[in-house]
Image (cartoon, rainbow, N blue to C red; front, side, top):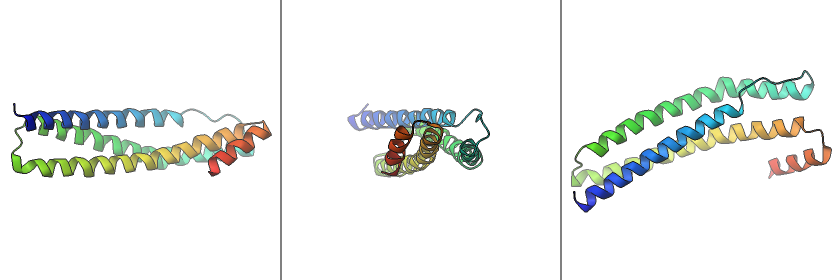
Length: 141
């Protein structure tokens, strides 16, 4: 195996590792907004509405991204197992760059929506007014 082939194999394995890491983190994100919201006051109703938004709008995007990650991982596995010609190397690396950037951008959008849900929930359910103010300031930064 030539040095170039070894490098391509190493790089494709790294891409696969990053795809798996993104997928694991998406599963963790989904768990953040699962479960029941207890209580009937104004604050818990607002949190429940946010949770419904995440379930209806964000969860399908998470599922879509996970399908894309799985499909791309299969494609990368196929690339790794076939003999890549010298002329195709640039194409594959450009594709890696474009796809991974796209996935990370998509992931950041999902992460931000869930992060703000979790922060709002912490703020609204926190009964300590000083701590509540600190959380609000942190969220506004």
